[in-house]
Amino acid sequence: MKTTQELQILSLNAFGDRPATGLTPDIAALVERRRRSFGAGSVLFYDEPLKMVRAEGAFLYASDGRAYLDFYNNVPTVGHCHPKVVEAVRKQVGELNIHSRYLFDVAHDYAEKLLATFPPALSNVVLTCTGTESNDLALRLAKRWSGGTGFIVTKTAYHGNSATVTEVSPSSYKVGAPPPYVRTVPAPDPAIFGNDIGQGFADAVAGQIAAMQADGIAFAGLLVDTIFSSDGVFADPPGFLKKAVDVARAAGGLFIADEVQPGFGRTGGGMWGFSRHGLIPDIVTMGKPMGNGYPIAGLVTRPEILTAFCNDFGYFNTFAASPVATAAGLAVLEAIEEDGLIVNAAGVGKHLLARLTRLQSSPFIGMVRGAGLYLGVECVADGLPSSDVAKTIINGLRARGVLIGAAGQYGNVLKIRPPLCVTLNHADTLVDAVEDILKGMG
Ligand SMILES: Cc1ncc(COP(=O)(O)O)c(C=O)c1O
Image 1 (cartoon, protein in one colour):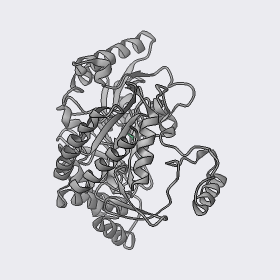
Image 2 (tube, protein in one colour; image 1 turned 45 degrees about the vertical axis):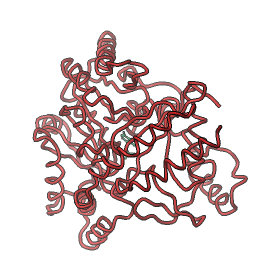
Image 3 (cartoon, rainbow, N blue to C red; image 1 turned 90 degrees about the vertical axis):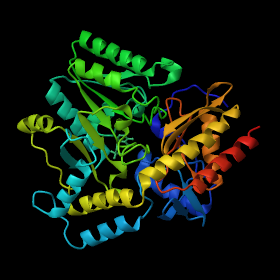
Image 4 (cartoon, rainbow, N blue to C red; image 1 turned 60 degrees about the vertical axis):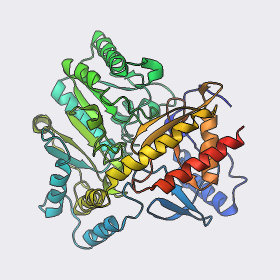
């Protein structure tokens, strides 16, 4: 049951390349069709893959006729198929949809509303289509501004899938490792850094800056996901990130906050994960929840950083900042406000964290942590990280109609990040189901 083997991010809860036997005939046939066309690039969840047919609010409806309570998907953040977003996209796509080298109002209604959620210094926004593109551009801005090429990321970070962004995503490597200009530090885990995580994490960053400089690599920046999601979800204590950011800046680098996971209210303490740490990043990247499923992403930064880059390079992105993308983005911001989703994330998140923490009486549950509706639950066996226990719980939840995922260096952390519209009852359904599974595990 136990493993301390490190796992690559896409292997977590994956159906893998096993034969499609034991599945219902329609699912087996679709798995085979998928393998024929998607080939080795196909990644599917669960021992029994799910075929989804529609979604609404906090629920996904599958071809087996069942409703699945969604505690996994952070993209449909305001709720699956939220009527406001659906209507905004439907209306705009029938009216005007062009690239952004013409003038139209909605892009600026959106840009201004989005920028108003950031500290005033971060007053320029560049829109893109994916989190990867945002991080790719952020790396280019940081290199131009700092004159360096070296980046520091966490050990199990994931920041996207382009050639350059894969290099700062150590969790993507099945073989090999990031290049010499990318250095890693451990996740800000109390098991590694003890009680003073802020100092320990900052010292680790300082050590890696010194090591890269000793190898003749100039430091460009520190890039972290401010909820450390793929590392296994680390939110506490609030403010622990500040010392590492000070170290990065003192060494001439920029701080890039990747808000693709925690952004748009998920942590329940405001719109952005970095505000939990009482700091202002140099660049903030975002994506996933930004369009509730419509592909829109972007970065915000200080004008001087963007200007320096634009003096050297042109940047244009065909589909970004289109009327439809920005109409979707605007509807999401309005829905977050109108539906009170940040307050809901805080309230339901607090209840969920309290109930999950009580599961620590089980020998299979270790640390429980997180902020708002981004929670991580460590699975252990004989006191060691266990991805097998995590898999048992994840598949057991699927059988009971609840969807969650896994994260962390050892794939042993239950990753809980539902749409922000989930209720206290939904939270209880999840925890009751986990309790039931744990009971069955002895
Ligand atoms: C923290 C983080 N950054 C960036 C990305 C990349 O975003 P995208 O898949 O939209 O390119 C992801 C995707 O999972 C992510 O988790």
